Length: 75
Image (cartoon, rainbow, N blue to C red; front, side, top):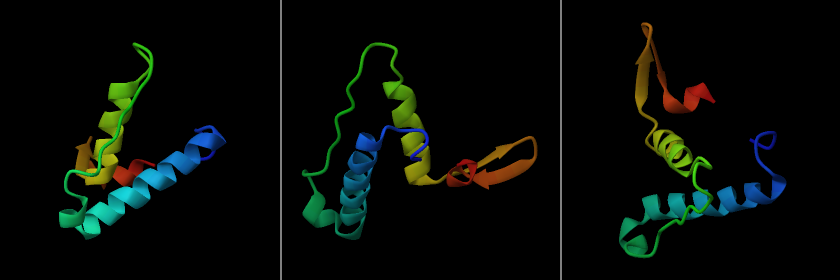
């Protein structure tokens, strides 16, 4: 990931995933407190980023040309 993102963004992802995992461990405590805001210019890829992130977090099994893998396996 460090080759794809600026170093300053890595810490943001670490904080996000720590909060996300804590919410999974204790959803009652996180209710109404966990949220994200994705900002950027028109056409900057906000929707695409969120869609890919949702695939990774859900880790769905995806099939293509007879091959089946979990979303995380593409990375």
